[in-house]
Length: 164
Ligand SMILES: NC(=O)NC1=NC(=O)NC1=O
View 1 (cartoon, rainbow, N blue to C red):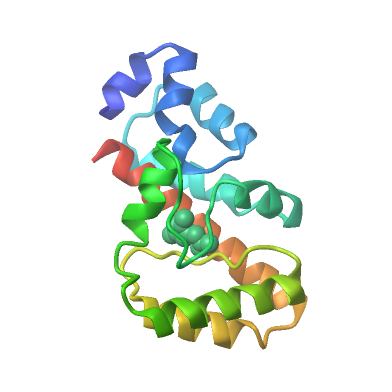
View 2: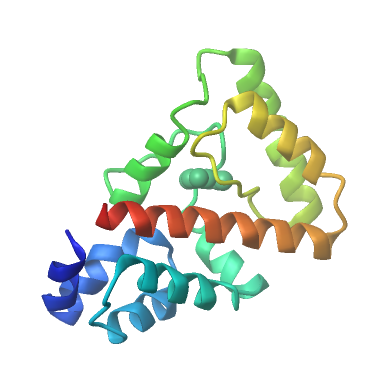
């Protein structure tokens, strides 16, 4: 879908067109209600501005649509398909890497009470493992800030790709 089609679509179609970006209905509805967008840049600026307001509650809600790093997203939905693409560089054949990711994901969830979130696109499994091990040392407030930053990156990447 291009931006003109997004602007012309019904509200329901427009919501459906960007629902895969993040599992936060208010954010989706705000971007649909603010149509017509004069440019993709204008949309991305407002989308990021709204995403800057996300807090721990939004983070927890959004995580429902993000499988763990190193676990293949099951299901046929667009989010699952995107997650598989985004995590495409994780070499699942590397058993040691997969085991390390699983162990560190579990440690992260024990420490912070939620799934570790990272913008996976463009990162190898090794790079994500290193980030996971670094962030495991964070205090809770700093880690929430980092996780929210990653959620914004994933969401804005997905939004941009919807219209390219
Ligand atoms: N737990 C995660 O970080 N999951 C993901 N990161 C991405 O970039 N896509 C995902 O599904």
